[in-house]
Length: 101
Length: 188
Image (cartoon, rainbow over all chains, first blue to last red; front, side, top):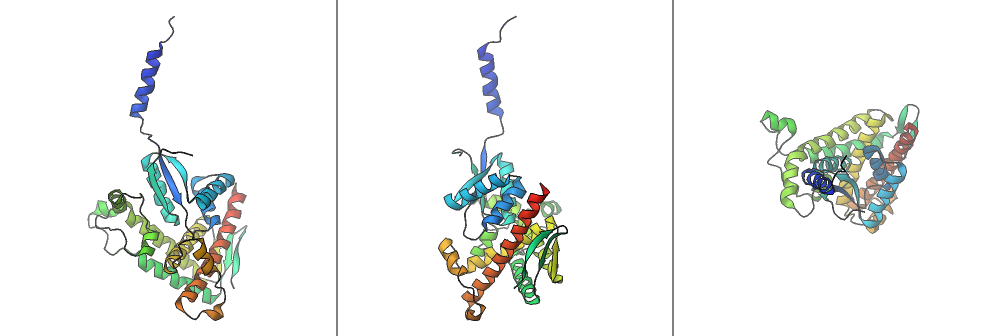
């Protein structure tokens, strides 16, 4: 039996990276002095299904840092989320990910 | 003053005085008028179906822009392109929530299921966004300035009247959202 060679593995990885459609995009929610903290937290819980703790953490990040990347994924998915956020009256934008965290 | 919304076995209930219902009805109607598209839906049935609107432009009224914001920052072309695809249905969704909330004002007791409560919260939020724009609320300090106006006896100009209305709608939304959060926890 032969042991599979390293170069083959490398090729597979780089090929899958090339065709991957999941270039990370992110949904940014921006702070404003109008939206209630309770409401923002409710939206994060009910729409994204986030836990109370995660929703509170993201809400506080929006509040104290002025914005938070609340979701990551494909461009199309982030755009759909943004429209939903605008439906709730939250100010959200979509951008190419990069500086996560 | 209205009784706060509360979460119970029958859903979320609230109680509003006739004068408060009249006020909310007028506010909802005003925002509906703001949101109604200036042009009729496209005559192309497919375009109409998906809500495509090539004539759409970035709103010049800052309050309307707050309701219908750009989806990307610092890229006017991409933002406009996305707006053409989505703005009409976003307007329709918001008008739907405002109409639903307005219909709920027919009786003094308001009973809401989860979906109804969400429509109400969205409607109240859009009212607050527009009032905040008219009141020039740009930061927390501005919000505090408006919040301090609490005495209806002192409503002697448009700004203090709008401030009182804003505070009332904020109080109402806060009480509704607190009840929604209680329901959400119970459902888990």
